[in-house]
Image 1 (cartoon, rainbow, N blue to C red):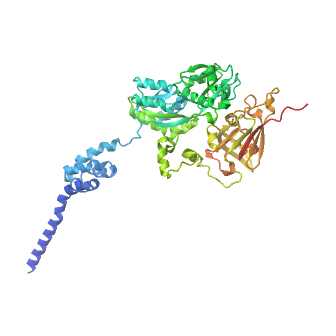
Image 2: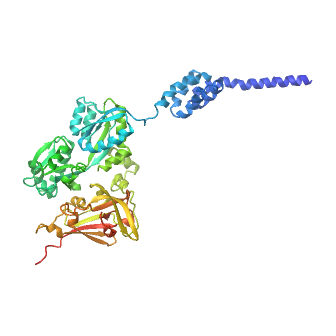
Image 3: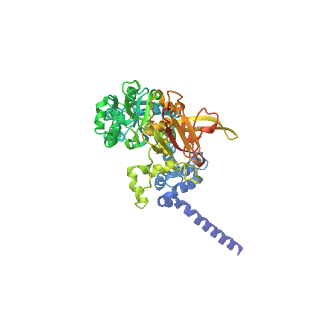
Length: 536
């Protein structure tokens, strides 16, 4: 009886072993084709018992989990045709190249040919230093010129890996010719300014004076972007009665030359061969700025330049893509800002994005100022302080009294100064970024100074008033380059941060002052005053 019981138990054990063994032989083939997402994790589990000792098994088993999204496209196909342990040696080599080629951020190599608008000369050469440090085996070769000439060269077969234009028209021409293969993106903007020689022999104070008799005006060829932007500006002025009948025709009659690119235009004025020209705000570079007068073009006449960039059909597309990414990235954008370029518009501001934005807003029009204005103003929220001044009013002896927001000030030539001054109970050290008062006055139509006597302008005062009523008076001689020429700033950032409510939107900064009494921290208005000649 005992023997029979033992025999019966043995038979049951054998049956259980058989039942457990049968699924393991069929599971790989059944599960792999029907569940692709599960295949990468199930295949290694089946392969492990058969090939556990070899070192290749460990890397093979780890491969599917590290590949995540890439492995399912390879592993299910291999599992469907090959079952069991043999599937992994076949699948692993197929997936391995993907893992090796994954790092897209690896340094690039070879020559990278960049065709770029001449107004980008300094900023791109500045970028080249950092880019080539990160890519020591790469060599950037630049071809700077008028965007129209570069687009023509590309259309005629010239080889380039990157094309950066000063307007979208020439980028479109390069795309139509097939020379540009990548998607173009706007990476920077620019404003127009009026320049004259430092001695300003024609006594030009604004755009209106370009039509005066005897003025020698220089511009670029009509097909060159700066020539196009200048023509658009003159069209706007011509339509404004304030500039007089036939304004554009008078300026055309005063035009003495049309240059091939904007840098040649600047050179003509710098050398005194012309009395005035319209150029980009970034063209008066530090090398030539002290030889020029810079007069802001009024906002109603402005045409903002847009700079698109794209990969071109050259011999080093990988290098071209790397440089385009650098320009669009934070380091490239920081360099552009350093040289005075405007940031590219946000995606919401583009024409193609407007319908989507409207739909998302229930069909309502965007808020005043648009997305770009909201983004720019975001660091300075509304505050309860009664002394906060969101704008600075420029009044008195200027051609076009107006108010400036922080965005307006940031469009003007920027400077950063490090200062130290006594304030309160101790010494304050800070870095301020802003624009010179003279730039602000120029943007308000220029200072209208008295000429009724020898150096009559030296009796003029500049009264700076804070939102809390605090006032400081400056003498015009402190600002005038012919006399003091101090770099007195209207600052909008302190230590690289927008100033908060206690400091207002802008602050007067007087480098060289030992005490902070003239550092007006809540500037509300600035007025140029003339007490008039002394009475005998």
